[in-house]
Image 1 (tube, helix red, strand yellow):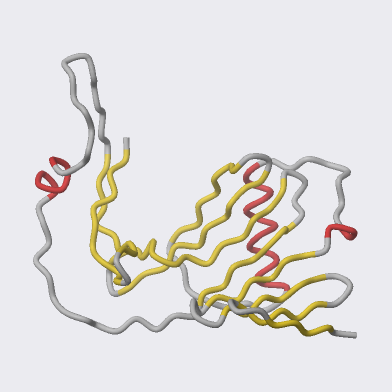
Image 2: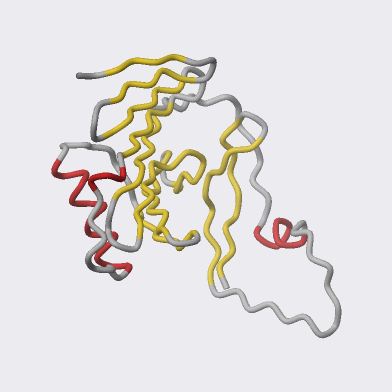
Length: 168
């Protein structure tokens, strides 16, 4: 059977294998899995973990668009992030994501269902202006090697705003 709970922040549905949290204010649905069903027999590499994440989406027919998949190690788990787009810019504000352990067990899946509406227009700074605003205490021994810069969206002050993402 399925159990149902509610607190100030979310609705929680659960059964023997999983929990489904539906957040009231954030437009987030989070699936968390019961670790009694995990397999700890073989550690996986990063590429296998990304494949497990994408196969999970296919298996359960979870469809959303994304331009890029990132996999970053967080303690003993990988955060798999599915970066989408708004118009022609990547949107890093509320990416759908999974937390997968080193054995390939999916610990949680975060699915945001957000419709973006134009609020206003803003002038975009140049890359040089944006770089100069980075709060780095420069000294003569510090060297910075940048090899790429992308214009993307991020979330700040309740708005999705354009920003430069520097790589190096």
